[in-house]
Length: 92
Image (cartoon, rainbow, N blue to C red; front, side, top):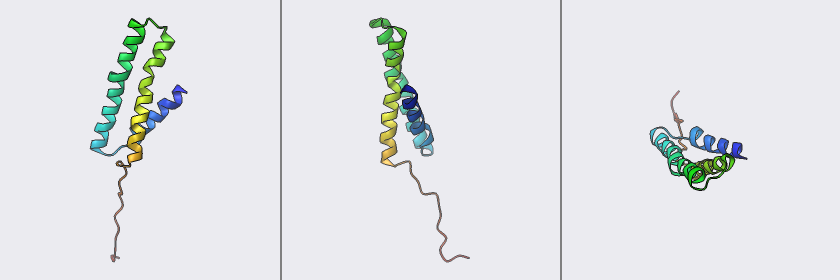
């Protein structure tokens, strides 16, 4: 299950992106997941709650769920979707 969530987070964050602003948003989603979810969960689970390593790992993997949710919201807004074609009318 964790593998599927990780793949979803990676696909949404890295494959669906607009040029410069999109890269900034992807970086923001990715780093905020690590620093706001992953590291605090590792600290809380390992040092405060004294949980075994597999529980701490599961807590840290919540960052992937966070990234997948934010990435899916961004994907559904379709702001990343740009028409790159040019119509040629009346030219031979």
